[in-house]
Image (cartoon, rainbow, N blue to C red; front, side, top):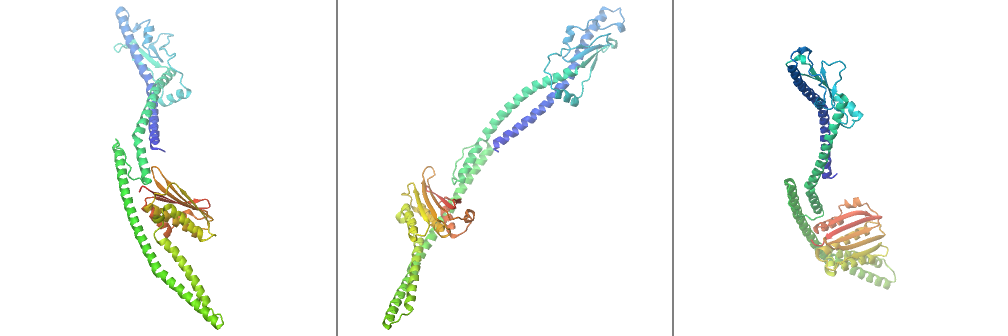
Length: 460
């Protein structure tokens, strides 16, 4: 999962937990607010009755205090205004058949669901009545008893929770949205860093990163830039060393070719001359004496073996000497390479050559590397597989990344994994040349065989 989505998911989880905590707190506060409303109602009614009590006491001073009621008509509309909704107030000692005076509880809110009405009292308990004396200095004046209505209390708590949750939910959505935008904006440079790392993986080490405002991202960007510089320096040093090793090896091959031509070739020519002389002399001697001896036949066999060795020597000298691209160019040398394999034997597999793009201006190390890779891949396909058809494709890809693609495919079977792990001299040489050119090499399975593909950058 992307980092932005992970952070947003965690943020939403935190918001949900906070919203749940706010819901629990709102439930507790709303439920207990009924107790506060009950106490406030009792206090207000007791204060109003205290004023009426002392007024009646002054107007009816001839009556005994213990027989004096606070006020005969205390159940008035003004008194109901002092009582909170869902609270009932009664005066004690109450008169006969007197009912409590209750605040308006109709239409105070939506009917709560059953689960809420059953769960809240179970966990938060029931409401207690509140008693307030009418006058602290006159106990005979009576007291006010306020009792909350349980059903009305639940309804008020549910309405309060709905109001609080609506605001809290709106704030949670706004916070989540704004925080998600802020997180996405803060992590936007991470995509630039990932793109730079992907370009580095493709060999473009000098990838310039913009300056980031965040100190942590700026440190990461600086580290990536330093890593790219060091990788480019190491790659250049390795390529230079590999090129030097290849040059030394080519010099050794040319020296070896000269030695083989001068020493081995001359000796083979001498052996062939001696064999021809022996064959001629033996044939003349046998003709004069009228008999056929086996020396002439042995000399002919020596001549045939020498011819075979000289042919093998010529093939080896072709491989050891300077490649044809330096003389004919890449395109002509590839055509000559394929024609030489085709002309050696009609029993060999069919070799298809596919040249794509303009190859005329490719020369130097790139042309030599491409020719050597094609030569080695064709040799391996012909000698180490039972292929019936081999395809050599050389394509020049133009554009931002000007490169040369060499791909050799055959249908001779083979395990791509085992071949890729092989440490043979042929594949090792191919890897070294590709590394020296700053390219890439892949060995993958193809239809019925293997596919060896090398990419050589021409801009390097």
